[in-house]
Length: 509
Image (cartoon, rainbow, N blue to C red; front, side):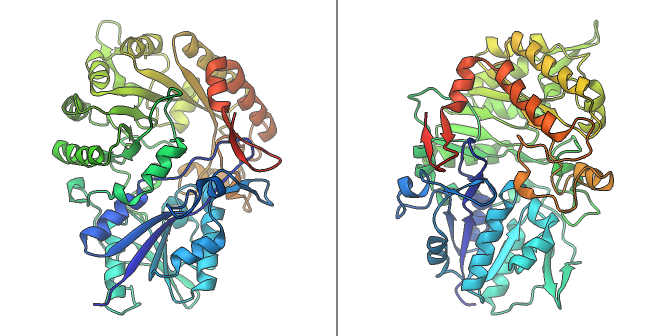
């Protein structure tokens, strides 16, 4: 066995002008690094958006470069990336977010041209559904599913001096200019306690905290940020058409990783102990469905009480899980046990996926996962506010057959929620991301051009064509809705960090 050094790279970020750049810092690399460390391999993580202690944040993060696409690039130079990569044998570059595909491909091409013999691995929902582009850019292997075991098998093979990967499950590679998807069978990890502990220490946490731009939450001006993300479960009981989970099925190359699976209470507490040792004060729970098994979640959350964390949730607490049926009225009212437990455990920010103000849209596109007419939303918002939990809402618009009247119905519904005490309303334009049923639907129905640009797959951009409401009109409605529905203080808070569209410089105020 020869020594193999592995480098996992977050590419530089790209953003549209006047939008805030936030470091990626996703859980993918701590989880993969944890797997490699457990197997005894050397692995490092380099975030090319923020650099490491040898990089000056003022030069790397706070001075950005305009791109020909009209977007803004934030991160270290290509030369710096190559210098870092030069001493490693295996390079891993994930691609989860479609909008960042261009940056990932540029890093891959650059490394391939400079170092033809290095093994380059990619993965993530975007990479596995855009294989042709990734292989053409120089990737050797694409992981088609959860990759904690897969990346260890790949590195073990390299350590044995081999470049033959036919025996490994859940990968794709090229041979004789053809893409080969492995037919080796291997079950997914059902018991999440078998997963390695995430290597959060491998991230440039101090740099993230100094920058102070997590992907959600609301913080006071002088609040010390020492945040991290974690997951207590994987998968989701819902199968919304705009979510990749709905496409992660038994018969697909990913296997049924969309199935809802949980970590034990003891495992979650062990992970929180690790975060505490790192000095983390705020934890973002990133589960796709934290309350997917409500009794389990309440039991677990009660054990978190007193650990001293502020808990924030920007994803995965569905409305139906915060309410329970009132048998006399047949309506869903606040589940006070759940809300009180969340508050006692330190939950202070929760974002609720309302999705739409139209029952038809929720039924057709969002798994019919909650009922506008049967849930007492004003009482739910009131109950959360009474327990000092800030509630914001996510609202989507621009579905292929959604009418202008339905779009405005969603805007008016958001206004009603704000009047009931909602703290903020986020308006998203529907994105047909690769790997989702909505993507396949959009291609087949002519709502997405075959030469679509992944760069535009941003929640403020209308990506589809031939929609009932024209794309430009949708963007105008979305922008106006955000301005009209949210309060001045919240708008100013979100605008407090912008990108100068003329110079590309990111600055405060």
